Length: 110
Image (cartoon, rainbow, N blue to C red):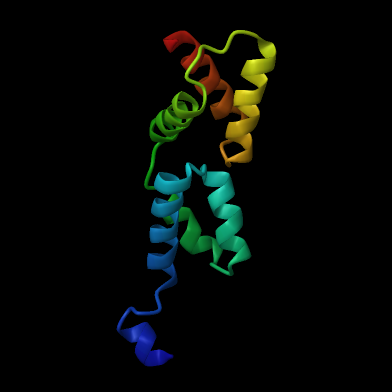
């Protein structure tokens, strides 16, 4: 084990960074969901925070808006549609306030 750690084959920090990048890009996950899954996998919190901090709030907002653009090609016409969009983002791990801002931005852009 020591040899694997010394040669960086076993590197929790690197794992957290790669996991974060992959799940953001491939699955559209937000920071809350990524953090929960990394904690569930046994990655220490002090290694998760730097991996998540590599993106700004604006980056997260852009990612959330991109997800909405993929899932909702038509404008969000009513409160029910806007609520569905907001719930999608929250389930994917975006915080409620950012999800709200993304839904509003998506509605304005459409």
